[in-house]
Length: 382
Ligand code: PLP
Image (cartoon, rainbow, N blue to C red; front, side, top):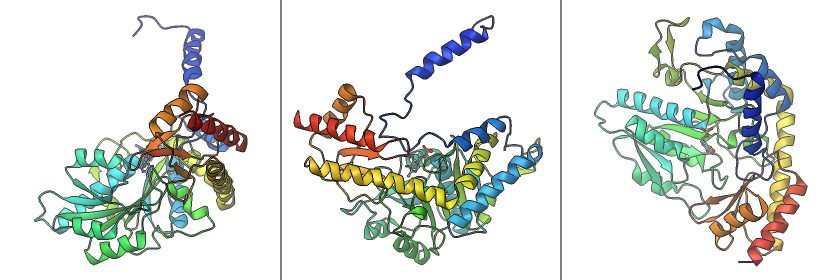
């Protein structure tokens, strides 16, 4: 650290330099985040100092957080659901598994090493869960359609299992697991069921085709949904919702020197600004606004699939949402060449290896035309 402070001019010139190295989401087809909506940005700026870790000092901001939870509960078919705004899908997943563990072990004290069964497609946040919580995370194989294989999931359940996880919009393929079937299994075996809808939560409710995934399904006990992905809010904005308050209550710790007596969140200090940004953008767009945004992304998705087929490339899966996996030859080389030669950021699916694209609102139809042209050049040059 420098001994004396630098001038404002110098600081901002340093910031400008760093910012110029960042991507402005142009040519970014690998990210599940995007530019926050203008309204979210403006709202965020107004509440920069608001700390949701000390609710008593910021009752206005906390009121808006509660409004967001209410709106999300309505969206996910449980208007009475409880919850709080997290830093994102990772925190929501960690907290959900923590609750399943606490409640599961309290219910069945014989459990020594609690386990959960998740689809093999589960996000890497579940690896963090395993490491942090001493919960064994068992990964069930996928069907050829990249949905969890129910029979395989069932086989992995034993006396030490506390919960199951289903994914509504998996990270690599955008596929939705058969949540109703997982729910039946959960009810039958008296297990909790957490749905990771970090990405799909702001997509599925706004699509023409319906995919059951939320609290409408009886066995679903908690859901992760991220406003900072397709919700168009600012970072960090995630949400954890639970059907019953017991789920959050079992996470409480005493907070002796704060304005509240207890806290069930993972982090202490929490961004009020991001919560207010989420409130503002949800109110501003309404269901109609999100429907349009999802429709736009699905149009881009359709254009990618059509264009890819015209150059002889098939998708690994007919896209369910705005995530595309393409069966290109030598995907790693194609990815590297697209970046080095043309500046496109795309990613890779693991099993099988393919080219993964996420079609977010920051991409234009013209970008897609250009991308397809570049993809053709790269693939023909292999
Ligand atoms: N769950 C799913 C399905 C995701 O796709 C992601 C991130 O892409 C996460 C969880 C983790 O979210 P975050 O990076 O906001 O913690």
